[in-house]
Image (cartoon, rainbow, N blue to C red; front, side, top):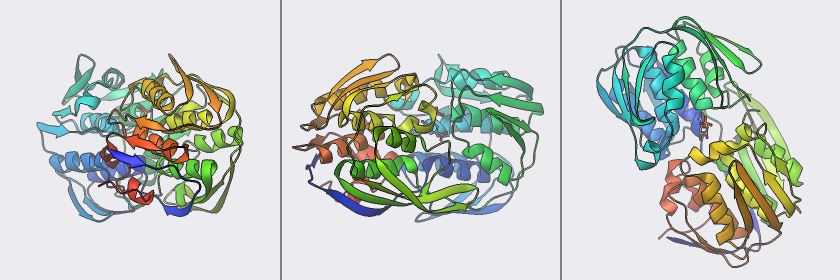
Length: 418
Ligand code: S3P
């Protein structure tokens, strides 16, 4: 349990941890090729540690020195391993495609939260390529057996970078073209990294097509994670002025900036540059009066992990906001429609859950109260922002769950955990 006090102002310059999605991919892809790569500013949160653990179990060598990783890819992959994916959906889903592509057998399992998340969405399209992936009633543990892979055209019903990436990783060794089409474009870090590593990959609108390719290793300098920066950006919008430095602004990830524009949040980007195929910028956000917004299914993928925070900002805005088409929130680390609704209500806000989103009647201010995270890192961090911006502050039950994606979150907020 941690007590969070309300603050009059919140200002500062912040260096945020490395991007979780890019770190996972840099570790996994480099573990699969014959070569050595250095990954700098890697996130060493628990989820990425899970990816390291699994890739080591398969035969890769990974040396960790702070946030610098040295990855030596495996030349032969160990068979029959039991791979512990911890809490990490990205590890489990991408790794299933990776293992199928390497034509080895493996069991993939995870913690209670991960074991409750849907895995049929991975097994079914991979089976369409010929892969042998069995779920346990649509969930983990997953069992992958060696099988020859062939080409296929796959049209996904949901926009999911995890599912798309699993198919592209398997497609690297399929006999024939694998084309994956999404209803709305999800984050494209896998495509960018695969291309930079030499994959034969074409992008046409929402379709990514891959052909059998040999990859080379790639040094990656990981930008800071906009999903982690978002909490500090929100605190700037609510309480003062914040500058988040060197943040990844890949257009498939910047939905939070679109939400800011609609809410009326004043922000600016400076120092924009390209590093390793990904754009980065420093993002300055200033205290703003916010108005109600509407977000739909088209908007969700580019801010999927920020939606609990956006819902919280709506609770501080003026008027009734609607967020719809976000049913994917139901199957994240917690049911984020339910846990976000409870969070906003516990802080004194007015939020109603919809099957696929929320209606939030903004009150411009929240009293504060007790936050239950349900062991979901994004709910705990959203709660911390809400409490700092509230009138009275309050407490969060399990602050340690932030280790998943943001190990020094409370330090950066200047909150002592013990
Ligand atoms: C991620 C994709 C998203 C996101 C998750 C990370 C990734 O999940 O919620 O935190 O790195 O590919 P979906 O692809 O299931 O939407």
